[in-house]
Length: 473
Ligand code: ASP
Ligand code: MG
Image (tube, rainbow, N blue to C red; front, side):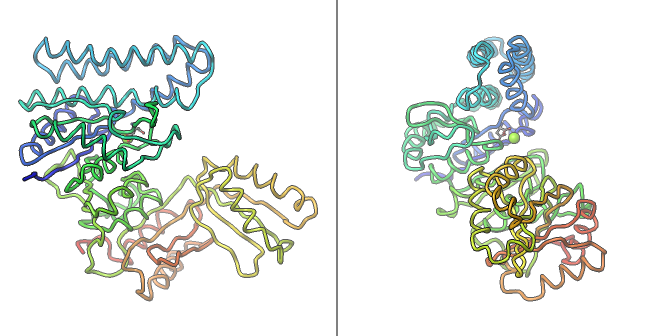
């Protein structure tokens, strides 16, 4: 007899101020009237960054600086509360709830300032305060619309390992806890509004799932509750064929596969946290990306197969904050372990390697890493190859920061001949110089490295070449 269950996640910009929260509440209420609905919310936009700033300010010993940030956050949330909730009594109740969270945060900052020490565990406790403040606000806004609603902290639902700052869920335990806590509420017609981004270890210690992790929270809960669908409400109209700031003709894609979406997320299309699709893939739960500012638009549906008609390329993406590192020179020819040592080193420093290419003469291995990982990767490589560098076996470790990686993505590219030819022909005609190329054997993407300054002509040319502006297939 159980009715349809939706898990809906609202990103920071979708709960960015009172007006946005009211709009989100309308969407939640509509969902809850049509079936069962669990909401998952991010912090109001910008709040997580400010909290991290408060934590770092405290770590530097500046306790009053941290307090000032907390005070500004109090004002921001109380202002939103003031315009969302009409009854004085209800306002006071929610205000007290938020105050308890802020007081807790204040204590974490004081402790940090006193010790001038910020452990990953304390940083998690501070950076997750934003979700613990936004959930009560959103639940209050839903109640304003006449529907019973309750804010729930995900520490009661999502059980994770102890990797602070990027925790992974234990799905079995999460399933048990989420069902026990949420299903009875849904049974009674109460809409749970769950804090995104956070969970708790087996020992009950608060953890976070990594920046942007609320998407992941939503699919973890979707899988744990056997939801019929997960809807990620954000500020763009779904997954686009390219970044609209770079390609004006970019279109929203009606349906794509898990695979394609994951590929795009990995290559920096900022719609989804890269881990988002993992929890739902096995149960084949569809995930929608929709625009909370234009709820009538259909958005993009992510399904196991995607849409099978239409061939080839679905979307393009470009990553700009990457650096190309080359390890090589003629001296490494014949050294059997250079590749192994290079990538054990990147793994050791947990560098995010986005693309690898090696020439057949073996005198160059080059790979792209996020610029944020650059320094520690190069330092570690210099240490690893110190002796070889001395003996000139490895002639150089070269770094090129002025590059971008372009990826041409599409599941149906697999087995379709000619896509690589068309891609590089078009690049040649547009005068774009290709520095390195990689295509995985899965054939769902062709990626290549170009000079940073060529991003716009490269993307525009490819968008036209593959007819993506009429991407209704
Ligand atoms: N508020 C967190 C962040 O900004 C999580 C999220 O928004 O998904 O990273
Ligand atoms: Mg966010």
